Picture 1 (cartoon, one colour):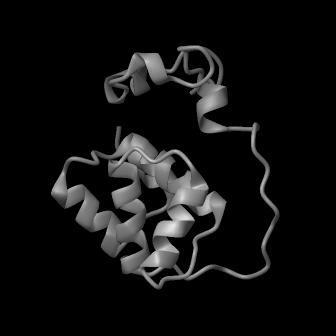
Picture 2 (spheres, one colour):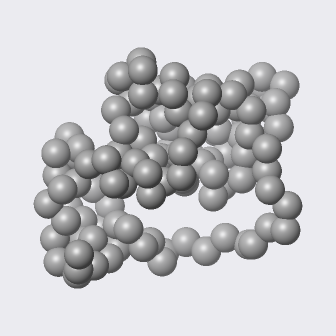
Length: 122
């Protein structure tokens, strides 16, 4: 599969065409390989509990787009913060799975899979 050209497989998941990043057209090479944001490599793996994932899902449902808001919600619930890269990964995962499906949400909270798994199910 070529990484260039329009990615028509994503169009069925996009509902708000006015809020697309990049001017309204999602290209495969930009969507699947975002190079706009770099993260510091961590030597330790962050443990994210189901309670933390539940708050992350609520932030996605509430259409929160600010990472600092996510961190403040986690801290106000007495939980550790998640890395910004984790927040971006969660947003990306829910671009593939249905946020309105209770089954999808519950499965992701209890046992999230690698992002490539969700990409292959479309």
